[in-house]
Length: 127
Image 1 (cartoon, rainbow, N blue to C red):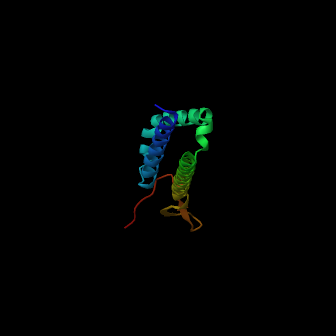
Image 2: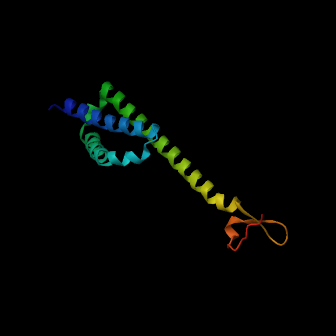
Image 3: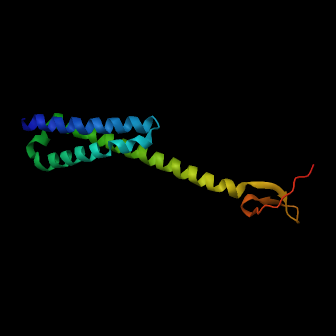
């Protein structure tokens, strides 16, 4: 395999992994991204080796254009990952506040509702 063909193969492989990752992120299947991890690590290792060894080959305009595309795709996926992480953090925060903002339907001696977090039971239903 020539150097150019080998480089094209490595770049195709990393482009494929990044494309699959983006599809999973955008389709809400974040939990399945882990399935790509081994393939992504292998593709990235080959890509790193290519960047270190290729030298003159990387100066070709076609290779440069593909490298820019790979960098752009990786950056976009990173943004999508951060958005997912932010969404999960917001969800956890909201769930944490649910118990703080909820009341049990009982009242304290001063007439205020009893917060759910302070409820200890022993409430009787009245008809």
